[in-house]
Picture (cartoon, one colour):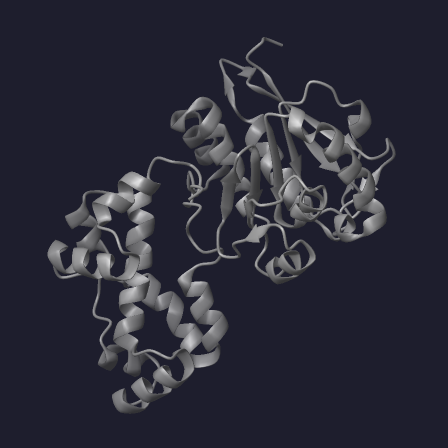
Length: 326
């Protein structure tokens, strides 16, 4: 190996979430130039025997965590196993002894339980899977939990939300080390976006809509998302929901606490925000593509919702990989 190769350790233990491990591991393993890999990925176990994920997949570590040398970065996947004190205890002990000597320490999903238990996150901003955010905040009152973020960097410590957010974080780490071209190459190979900005919520507005509405309104969501540039008036939406416009508007407001027009604008702005980050055209192109009548109308709506101009948002989130520490 050349001196440029960084050693990235992944913690392995009984009862981890397989995607928290395999997704980021695959991302790092694909970073290479002319066949030369830029990362050596190492699965570091609490023991050398086989262990299984929550879903039953079997893994075998390359090395014991206690014997893992020369690590640049340690990534701690989440999983039910790590939420058990007897599994977490040796990890916490290792982190307290070695955590400050690593360039980066990363948790995916509920991997934050071990990192927070070590005390290394005291006073720091963190995130985790939205389902566990309240519990993490209660168990570890010295950490500042931000439940909506996809991933957060605070000093040498990085935390992410669950499952696929671990891949978002891995791509951001790759970009931090080797620039956007390398991260984009990996993202293309994995057939995914280069990154969702860390400041975005953990799940999309369409998914939130489906979860809250269900039934007739839930079925409407996918159609709305692919027709943002079209006519999404109350009359059109009501016709698709097989309701009169007045009845539709009344039911919609009862379920969602806002008018259909307000929600359509919200969907359009969320899609516009994604396009701004991904660099999909100029401001006017983005505005028209998501259904605004003009760039001026779009700019006013965007500033009203997000507090910044679209161009400012693009500069802030289109380049930095992480949600900044304020």
